[in-house]
Image (cartoon, rainbow, N blue to C red; front, side, top):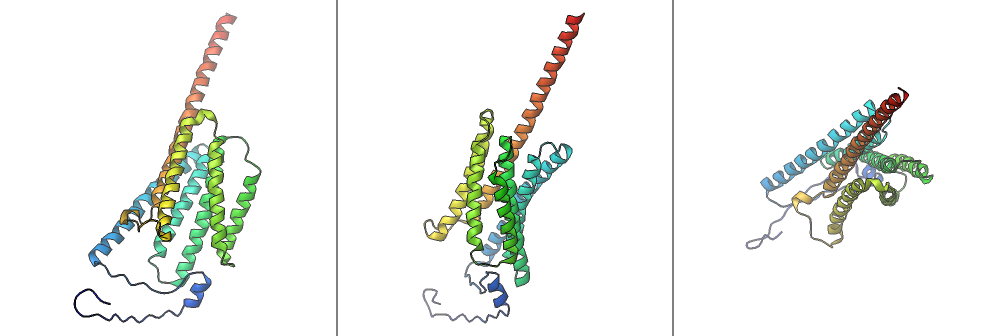
Length: 276
């Protein structure tokens, strides 16, 4: 290694991994990387990553708990339950990915990856139910098929029986994303403001996912530290947008019920007056 002027330097590394075969069966590629950088700066970057992940995870976890309590107090609004489960699934993915990057045990890495796969499929499946609950009415007949595929993929992820599982999972994710967009389009016209809120959340998520993918194909330069995991910002934006939509819908429903009660009270008084 030549650091500019002066003589070259030799860097010798002894690496041993007695668990390479099990890791390869789990589709992990054993090995190591060497990074030459400022140690203090590296620690600051790692600390900022941990802080950012903790803050965003806490935000979504709190929103999930709030909507779960709303469902427990009023089970009629099942969309609060769908939101809570979907959001907790996303939180589970973040926690697993955060632990995965700092683990050295192949068994623990495999367990975390299975947990992340299951959490992502749960988040997608219940996210689909959540979006279609916005439009009201009966679910399309294809939705049970999607949920069945989600269960199959979840079991497949545990067994890890084929290397093209990840490709099928990505295809399923894209299909569910398009299905969610179609579900937003089906939202009644009177929810125009709510539709704009949801479209904004999905747009931010799509932008951050694409932005995080392009550097891997050489289209964009590597992202700066605050955007090393840009999809996190998109997930938070989508979670907040859905929570705002649900809160607005809940408040609007209560206002409409209050107006109806006032109308019933007025009609009752009018009837009593006429009878007198």
